Image (cartoon, rainbow, N blue to C red):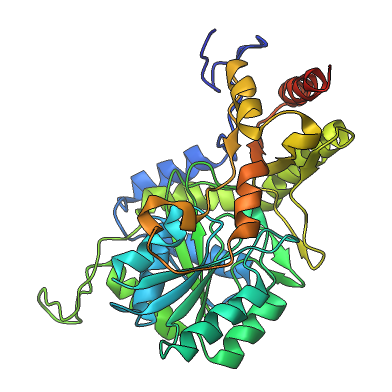
Length: 392
C-alpha cells in the first residue's frame, strides 16, 4: 500500500488520511518573510508581541505570554502560583500526560480525579470529594489543573465556584480547546491562568509553541521572567531564581499570527466534520459520540466516537486496526493517567467513568483539510466493519 504525504496531491483512494493534519492559513509565508527580514528571529520581536495581543483579545483576558509549548506554559503557571515539592495538585485523570507531567517537574504530587459522563471532563462532585479528602488528611491542595478535553470546556460554572469556596487556585488546561466556549466565556478565560497549545495537531498551529494567559499581571510577569532564564533587572547577567529557556521565537510567532486569524474558520470546519460523522454513523447499533455539554460549544478538535462491543460487535482497537489497514489514522482516546505506569502510585478519586470512556473511545480523522471524499472513506469502512460484525 502506498504511503503518500498529505501534500502529495494524489487523488488515489489509498492515500494517507491523517488524524489531525495541520493546514496553512495562507498568510504564513508573508509573515515569516517579514519576521526574517526584520532581523527578529529569536525569542522576542514584533510578531511575539502581536501574537500575545491577539491571544488575549480572542480569549478575553488582559495578558498573555507566548512560550515554547503548552507544557512549558503549565509548568510556568505552577511555578508562578508557588506549587512546590510535596504539594498535592488535583488534575483530571482523562487527559494526555502533559497535563500532569509539569506537576512532577515541581516535585508535587498529582491527585487524579475522574471524568463526568456529560462532558468527559473533570467531575465537579469528584472534585469536591478530592478536596475534602485532602483537607481532612491535613493536606490542602496547592492547585487544580482542569483539562478541556478534545476541544470541550469543563463545567466551569461549578468548578470555579468550588475552587473559590475552598480557596484553591484553578489552572485551566485549554491546550485542546482554543475557540471553544462555556456559557458566554471563551476557553482560556477560566481560573487564575490558562494554558494554550499550538502543537502541530491542534486546532491552530505555529509548528509548535504555546501560551499562558491570565488577567492577573503578576502571574504573567513572573511567568515571562521565568521563561527567559529569570534574569534580574541589572546591567549584567544576574539570576536570583531558577528559570528556563521557554521563550517562543519571533518566526514561530509569525506562523501563529497567521493561524490565529482563521481560528473561527477552523472551528467551523472541525464542527462540520463532526456533523458529517454523526449523519453518517448515528444509526449504527452500539456506536455513540462524545457528548457536547449543554452549557458550552466545543471546537470539536477531534471527532470522538464510542463503541459498545456487546452491541456493535467489534472492539474499538479492532476498528482502529481496520482503519489503519486502509491507510487511515485513528487513535484511541487518552488512556487515563491513573492507569499509566508513571502515575501508578498516585492517589485517584473515582476513575470508573474515565476507564469506560478509554475502553470504548476512538478518535477519528478530524483535520480541517479532510475532504468529503476521504471522510466518506472513513464512514464507509466503519459501517462495513460494524455491519460485517453483525452478520451471523
